[in-house]
Image 1 (cartoon, rainbow, N blue to C red):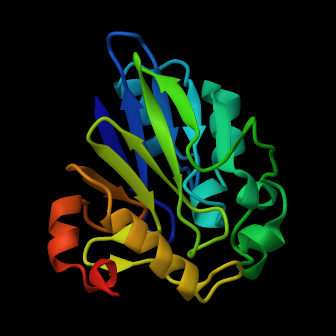
Image 2 (cartoon, rainbow, N blue to C red; image 1 turned 180 degrees about the horizontal axis):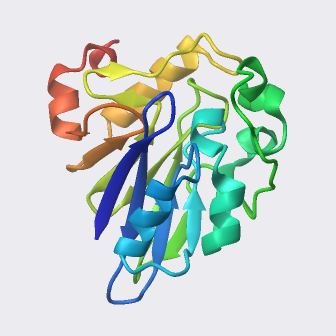
Length: 208
């Protein structure tokens, strides 16, 4: 079961994935732990999370994580290169926005490229895709790809924030473009898409 909700000032897509057979459940990104976020989990019958997966460390993806963990548990997972973003508002750039309050927390699992996390009788695969941030990742599970702010519908993430690199992001996009098979892409912002469509029409993914 897959559910989603868009929250926060910058319209962050938050996802809930639950496996009914095993009872495993995970959340992907949490800009704010609002009543709407809580309701999404409760309506799905989730009482405890197995993981809280973070696609990267920017404030609009992590500021609600501490409250989410306190309420529903779950091991906080983030790439090692973005781990400081969870407790340092300078790194998460929350400090640039006076209206944003970041409650610091720490990762339970520091991820690296190629790591796998057991889930629902299968496994989540981690792909390190630096460029938007140093520790940006994509998560793959069955036919799903959570792309964070790396790959969007006909677009890509920005690279002008701390930790960003246009050169690295294009290298990451080239690697994504070589992935075989078909995946539904669930990005950090905007519309859902799929890998075949992006390979055919996304000029950034097709760039040499």
